[in-house]
View 1 (cartoon, helix red, strand yellow):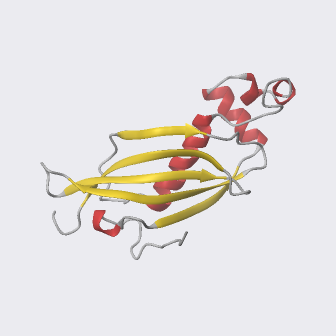
View 2 (view 1 turned 90 degrees about the horizontal axis):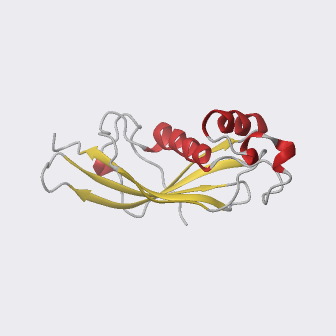
Length: 159
């Protein structure tokens, strides 16, 4: 696996700057017990996300981050580092979101993104769809979540 870097800043990035097969990594971002419990209490109040003592009695044997928390951390790294700035036109969604391994306090996550496909729009020639295969990996290089992100991005030279 060879990591690549963009030759443009995020704000000046357009669809033609994404090269199929390129791999980009961003992060790490640390995960604390407090982060996990605060997110869990607010958005996913299951005991293994909110209570370290009671979480020990669950199948996980301790506190774990909500998958939605992991996905929100993905989104932060994705937007701040990978996604085009002014050329981004939103997203029709993600495909195949999977949470594969628990994320625990003290973990540190890195986003690894592979440019899977760049598909020009057939109806609007100024844009296309960027398909990005995304993996969140922990400090042990274990993949903890995956998804295929779809983003609508403008072309630089077709505006």
